Amino acid sequence: MRTLILLTGTLISLFARAQQDSTRLPDSLDRKTLQEVVVTAYQQNLRLAQVPAAIGVLTPAQFNRFSNISIVSAFNSIPGVRMEERSPGSYRLSFRGSTLRSPFGVRNVKVYLDGIPFTDPKRLMEKCGLPFNGAPAHEPSSVFIYEMIDAFGGADAFYGKFYIHSVCPLGFTKPGKNGREINYNYYDSRELTAAVYDFIIDNIKKQIALGLDTDLCFCFGTGKNEKFLRQLNEEKKFFKKIIALEHPRFIMQYKSKSKKIYLDKYTAAFRSAL
Image (tube, rainbow, N blue to C red; front, top):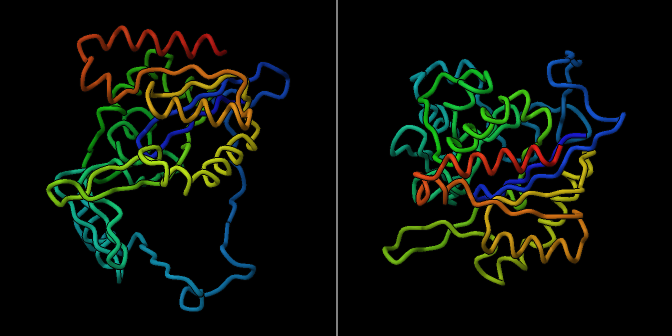
């Protein structure tokens, strides 16, 4: 089975060790093309105008109407949607007046391409071979992670063993001192933690239900997120063991001169789980 990696809205990650048995998934190099699977939200196929939900659809033709270096104009063609771009890859998104991304940055709302977080298209193109026609933005945390993945043996070797997802895949903000909204983590207040507690439990259960091993869990972050995870695990017994590693953003911002030490620490930890 593959290793589980869970990311929170602030990019804190969990890892569970892959099982070494006869039921393990085939190596990532042994790929097979599966039949197309169509997932619909209702019990019958309906035309878009007949679906009782607020759905906006952007087709390739609509994207091609605008610049091929930015998705902003295409998004803004959907009624009720407002997207702004301060710099390449730094967006603010509003749905019907509800601002999900403010201030600019990539901390709260995640965009996914083929199931992979899309906040660093540069790494997706260079390391994962996923095509992208827009501006090649990146995140400091992702820079560290993909340097670690390279040291581990590359994207195929790493993602063949580890699966990435979130503890709480929701982003939150609160008004700052200057009136602008700032990032707010699920563990920053008792009230918010209580409000999302059942959601977090359900989310982790769904990831484990994919068939992942739970002997070992690595937690990105050695502060409040680790404390919350250990308390939750004490109650729910999700994982047999949890090991916390320093958060990639902390390393890149405050320990960049010692980055090689942390890269070695990460790769050694992951290899020890195999």
